[in-house]
Length: 581
Image (cartoon, rainbow, N blue to C red; front, side):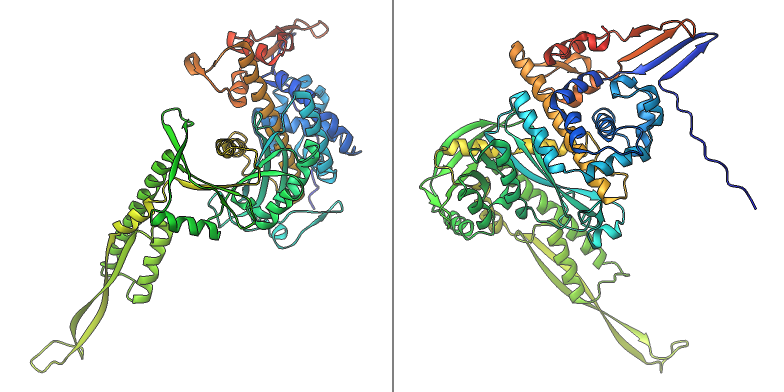
């Protein structure tokens, strides 16, 4: 019988070490950690984690400290949980808030326990306390808030988490299951991630993690109530997409003295009535304003429908026409038509093959409908299925044919497609290009102000983009649903720190009277510096410690900062001494 090998703790070397005799050189990465430490400290994240996340006797590292280490990992170089230990060993321990022994003891199991404690904590109170402090500390305005949601896609099975809610530490986990996937992966399971950001710097102030099959319209009332606690009342403008425009959601906000701006859904009767009048050319447009597009290369002329309209609930209904949106709508329609035509041509080629499997008219019709549905161009393409019977004669009996050989007639059904673009339908659809309706209960705002508030909704999309690209949220490399929920909370803190980073950097530029910062290669100017670019700018910063002998004090040699790096520190109010300069 073989004996099991005794498990021994692995030796972890902190920093990179070079030795020559008794002389030793240790190198540590510093990167942007001093800047991030300042922002995290001012935000009070570690302080409030210490208050709301209970200690664990099995953890040699306090859960609040371990969570902040994970947060710094997400901000600088996103690693899976099992890679955090190796990442930490390359960095200066004091920048991570750890000792060298603490860095050596860091592993995926300890990080996982930190996530356990975070899931167990009262996360709503934790977020409320943190955001309240951030608002006061950084002077963030809550006059206008934007809400939207995205899906976090999972490629694993997660069978237990998709069938019923699991009970962990006395709490129910979310359902990781199928829903309307916004990543266009209906074959994969998901969670719903709802985010609320401010107009002032797109600073995240709330997030919710919902079941994968939860619809967006069910999240707004609870979100609005929570944001009211942050703002100290309902006197703020709440902007959201068309899922807010339900009778219950709008009434919930309006009856409590709140204000909102949203988009009228296409399913509403008011929408159908207006588009009918638009089709018969009964709508008069009035010039409203001229706006520069986000790329700065186009001019957007915006018109507004004459006359006042209201929804059936009595809220303001404004119809706008955007010249830029009209161009984009026409281009999108042309793209759909071309894509569908290619799909139909491919189907026709397969129908003409001698080995085609489409020998039944119902199957051919179903294949045509599938092409039109996937291409989203059924309204603009006319398709006709033509049947062409092919006949042939074969011997009734085997053997060589002779004068008395009998033949039988066989008829095989073959199909062909005839399709063309319905130009009349295209022209009719073109009348709706660039048209969109907005609903608001705020009677004090002008039409231009309502339009501007809606256009600022795109700021939240940038946060979702950063969540899935900069931080590479998917895949999550975790199996336990409760740890996934806790990790999503850490990602919210990462978005919060990044947003504050960007806001402070851009405010510094404005106060300095500058318009740009040389963050791009070849010292090209950047007019809207992002936290990701600034963090990458400090990627090469290190600290070297030279030991002449084991008992001697080390000599420290920090990386000399460049002019751009020093300027970023100055704009953020971070002293160069944090980098040993």
